[in-house]
Image 1 (cartoon, one colour):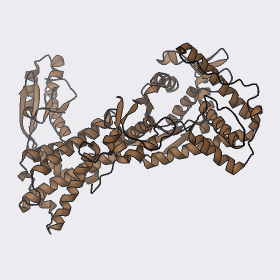
Image 2 (cartoon, rainbow, N blue to C red):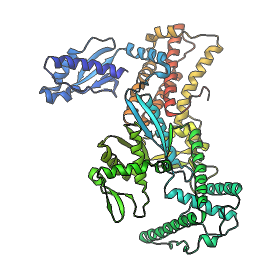
Image 3 (cartoon, rainbow, N blue to C red):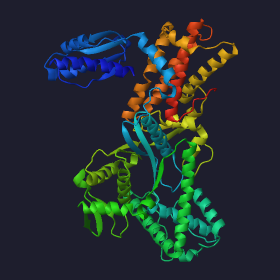
Image 4 (cartoon, rainbow, N blue to C red):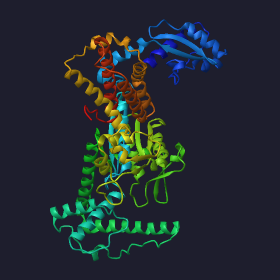
Length: 591
């Protein structure tokens, strides 16, 4: 990429002066300029070297400029202010970028070597206890696009979904389905406050009743014997009272879980497995429709039953990082940066979510993935320190885990169709706005910022809709090619490459410059884990092309100029395709 070419020139100049003993070694930092008057690229390396070299920055800049190797891409170099080095590139440098795009095609700006090593990215991982919501959708779009970007930036990417199917929520799911099943058996009962009330629970209950008949039926009196009624907080109750009532409701749910296990025996497992399987099937189908796939779906239940979780606890115990207190087993996470120690095994002998999560992360490392990247919801912020502390305790590594938090989503507007319960499901949002718009809109803002999703705008077929605007640029280029064929004309790519110097209009030069930026944008998105940079780049590229399309004729020009302009159009089409592909968005030929 051009940025690297300029950095290499500066690096060579530094090496020359360093060899002469006049400068220390230094990392070269080069950036695109915001003002074209300051050139195409600029570097502040002279300022960063000044203190160590004990020389004025401008004097260092002058020495570096004098030591620059000869090159075909730089027109002139200027020193500005206290010592900024500004590079003005020759038009031929940008023309070469167009030729590179056309030659590389789908691989332009991409590094599929895997030389940066393996990285395991775990994302979405929604509990299979109900429909995915729009927040899960944002995590899916972010995680999948980031994985795509990392995969073309030199990483060997492995994608995983962690299925939380062994904890209390899975028990509440099973009890919820069973109680709805009992209603189908003719039992009359009050549905618990802490059970899952959605229609999807009834659907699984109906399937169970259809397949097993009355095999799991028990009288409501036996189910609720000695279990008190659900308490309800009085209107106007303060926070403490509401929390007290909530605790009583949770206790009642736990009592029902125990009662279900006692009455059902092996049947409890049948109900729970069916309920989890139904929800996981919907999650898989939704993600597939959204264009998201995983290399592995890892079950928490399998970690427990296979002994992986127990082995991880024993490793922590053998390393001296755990202790017992109050009948519970604790991990000394405070010794590794966490704010306090955490419980691994509760006094009743059951494992905490934390214990199994530790086992999962250790298992990922043991499977040969030295770099872990987790994508979590913003409400898991307080969880990062304890997981990282546990990994550090066992491996001694503080850099093994990186966590990216995805902020919340709100719906700004839009008339939704069928609703599931009192919230909009992710599947419903896709049905309303379409896969392309949903993915692109999720990626318009940085993942660490709250997102307001405008449903009406996402559905609009107008230039105000950013994904439509970008896709329309691609479709316009396709229409140009169809018009060319309709007129009986042909396009000579070799002639176009040889004639790129004829593209001197401001629109053309601006579009060339924008196209040459693509590899840099992909690199920034990969290094910073920020796919939104690519989404905004594509909007800017589309804007440049639409301006060019509206101002100039492509087909009516002379043969050589027409070929050159069509090459520029084809390069634009390729970059739009490449970029949209990384975001998981289609590049339609007609709109």
